[in-house]
Length: 205
Image 1 (cartoon, rainbow, N blue to C red):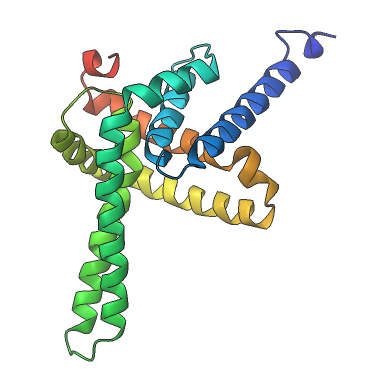
Image 2 (cartoon, helix red, strand yellow):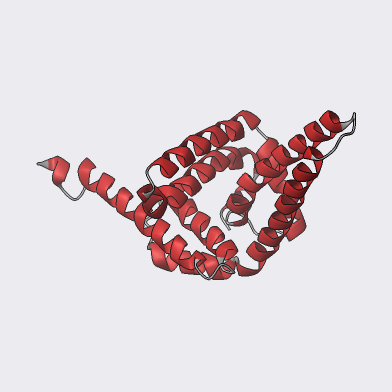
């Protein structure tokens, strides 16, 4: 039957599941040393980028290439965003202890900043593997991409939230599919914006 042939639907679905599972496990293994989490994130999105461009990918070689190419910039991004996230957490803890009449205003402002932070974070790694630019420009562009067609970014957040809840409910998904599927979803949403925001020559680099 054609459905079981090498170009059949069942075979293609099986290959997609295998590739997602392989990439997910590879990413987790590369995160075990902890200090390699940031370049591993860049490599994860680098492989997903090739999938989105309809390219055949040797997952391990592409992962290794993107891991090495984005080593330095991924650390700058990872350290910056980790620092900001820690500051925001401390801010929320501090606000909860406040007895000021301006507490609600400060709280709303902090929530707004946190929202912008998430918008930028969801865009910065897809941008990193899509264009060669300076660290400063990368950070600015990530916020611009996050704000552009913001309804798409909010949709991405909602789907990611649902996917996270499902994966926590069925824990095997975390080990086999969670990170690779999450990266694909994030990149897919970002890719819908790149065509309008990024010059063609940059996206092809």
